[in-house]
Image 1: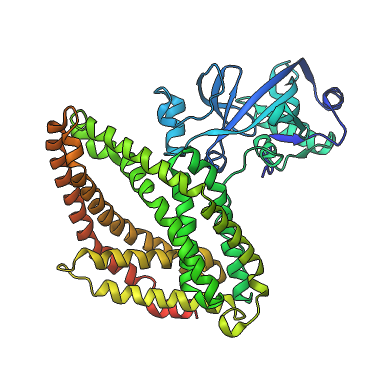
Image 2 (image 1 turned 60 degrees about the vertical axis):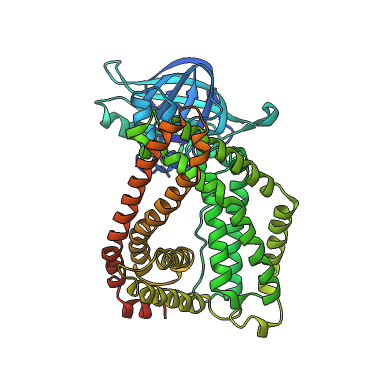
Length: 510
């Protein structure tokens, strides 16, 4: 939201380019440029990482550039003849644009979120020496939708500062707001276009809840949001846009299953049992594809020392991933999946009005009391289970502890806003550290087992014998990393168990 340092202003209702030029000329010494057409395609990740970082990626005039979303001042760019349909930062040529984008986007794809065509006039604000102190652009934008249908967007004035003339910039802002009657634009052009019908972005996971709210009403709101996240990520998962679509879909499914399991007394028992079975099926149907996603994403890091020798393995993993993805897509497109999501939505719609509270004793209770009791219970179980794990414990107790940690984290993330103070946030942070070690422990075990299972297939490929030798070294490395994660567990669990203390947890979530 632009504040005192706004760089975009909305024109008064009904004003267009010519009228805006007259108004500005009445208050400032300006030099008009010609009217031109501009055609811009804006890009972002599905979870709007560029927007959240205060940046905009734009293709215009044969150039792909990272801009300031307010002034359109370029931070970095490179020639690009046509607007790409999808791109990853890692695919860009080495240089400033890739260097800026890569840490912002990670493994996420950049896809078009809005195409905007504008009529615009460039203007220069001059001082007494006829030097340019501020550049202005007055534009009439329109969102270009399917079939090239255009949706007009509010006309605006964009300010581009000139280095060394900060005082003049402040004066121009004052003139625009107080003399010309313009008001700061509440949204950037790309956000305005996205809201008017551009590509949707990922729904936020957190739902505002009230401490005294009925548990069934609050749970229905939370699970509706999880359903929205599943449905929002389905197209990108099926189209394989990037690996995070499937990851976020699966997190929403796991959160749904955790709420079903931990807050079971809010639901009627019989339909709950059915939906728990169906969501378990959905999670299992997407599991192999996600496991191979992780393996492929991490392959370069694993294989750095033996890259050439492991090329047969890379190709085999990619083939297995494609096959797993096809199987998953069949499941996600199936009548069973469509029926599950439709029936689950209808069930949630009716949940707060459902009768027979004796079958769901927690339904009418306060949600903060119900969720708080579960948070305390899972936390206590984690402390007992973690304390029982020793150096000689088999892997299974660590895997079980990781599952409990996920349940606790999901409860805190979904319901933690109901409670005062910062305890929920602190618990999530300490859980993340613990789960990082537990996750690496389990992942390395699964990855080593996968390598062993692929031995016969790799051996049959060209270069297979050499690849098998390198795979043996890679398995040894994975086992070493698993052992290191195991060694980190005790220290990280002790930190989790110590802060915040049990008494503070009991007090906060009472």
